Length: 111
Length: 111
Image 1 (cartoon, chains in turn blue, brown):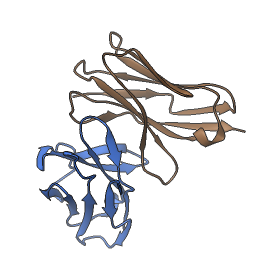
Image 2: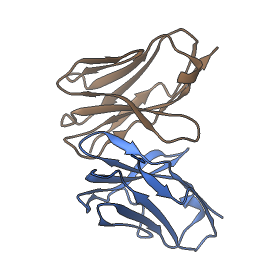
Image 3: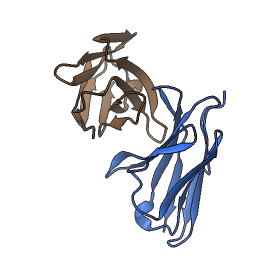
């Protein structure tokens, strides 16, 4: 099992550009979570899906952020337009039941 | 919603000593309590978890205790080694729902 796969691993972009982060959960898992980690705010849950349906998006900071899960094996987190304060490590995690397995993360830098 | 407090924020011990990290939670509906270890630049990884019907669980040098009445749970690491140095996160989870994470404890084990 390859585990949770995220791409890209690193992204550097200029303020105002659109950024799309991608996640492939572990096969068979039915829940998918997007987190953001920064030194100042720690590990924050942005949104989570169950059976491809968004269940709780209360952590999405603002309308510039959107997430989709078109099928059980793929999810995207989009930021449009990006701002320097969006710089962080974005983790995707998946689970079947309670145990969450994290992907390697995408380090986003917005200049 | 759930609120998780984690203490201490930093902990430094001598190799071979024990380390204890404590968390409290607020939502009595939480029934699953995982602990994650995150090494520098890596993803959080589940190291041990406990469910509400159990008071203590051990796995080699690590153990977790849960007091549901007082709404607190703790991570115990015995015979610490330098490779135990990392950031440790606790979390509280209601019935297969989203986890709320503590702010993390940076553990340093001095050789």
